[in-house]
Image (cartoon, rainbow, N blue to C red; front, side):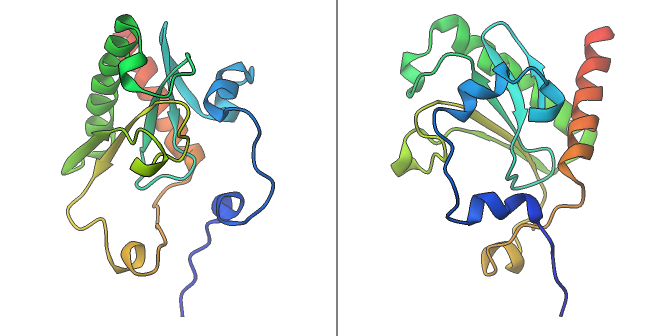
Length: 164
C-alpha cells in the first residue's frame, strides 16, 4: 500500500485549536509575506497561496477590507480584485500550462466558504482528469510540489512580469 503524506493538512483536519479573529485580516499584518505566502499586493487586495490547495498554483485574491459579501466591496476594490484575478490566470497559465482555470467565490458558509466572513476569489489551474479516485473517493489531494516551491515559482513570475 502506498501512503501519501500531507502534514500541512493536519491542523485543518483535526479538531484542534481554532484561529480567533479573521485569518484574511491577519495575514497582511504578519510582517513577512514569504512566511504567510502572500505572493503579491495591490492597493486594495493581496494574492495569497491557498494553504489547502486543490491543485498546485491555487491562489486567492483577498481584499484588505473585512467584508462578507461581494456587493459590499467598493468599486475600486472589486475592479482590483478582478484585475489581480486576470493577472493570476495569465501567470498560472504560463507557469503550469493547465487545460483550464477555475475562478470563483463561495460567499457564505452555506455556499462552501471556508472563511465565510471575508469575501475572496479563488484562482486555480485545472487539468483534464485532475479529480481522480483519490480525491473523490479517498478525499485526499495529491500535489506534485510543496507550497514553498509554488510560492517561489509564482512570486518569481509576478516579479518578472512587473520588471518587464
